[in-house]
Image (cartoon, rainbow, N blue to C red; front, side):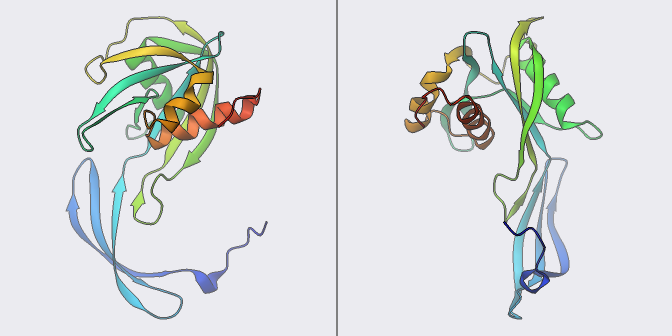
Length: 188
């Protein structure tokens, strides 16, 4: 697989005009030129980075939260996570959010993926971690963002995905990683 950058296919940025800017997001029109010389304004949305954790217990269950998302007016299962605070490392964010939302800490913790959920128009890095050996150290302090949380067998996750009950990008990336890395005959 080639990894060298090919400058002949790179878009050239000539400037940016900010349309909206807040503590949550920046929307701009960027003056770009394609390799063939075509030039136009392209919408770009910049959001804070996010970090999330797939927490697996010693019984091969994953901790999921049943949440409503008002933007899409839709319910679904999600993994714990949130926005990276300024100056905070994504690993710190993932551990902080896990504790705030669930009251758990993992015995082991590792980074498994860094991705952009909507590359091409939205700039927002997402970091996914996997924690194993769930240890409850406190009660959740952030309880208004979910209706409930449950330990769900990993074997049930593919069916939940197929039914559209797990649909957030971070949850999908993290859960599919765990399923793929464990093999064990789980059909995706």
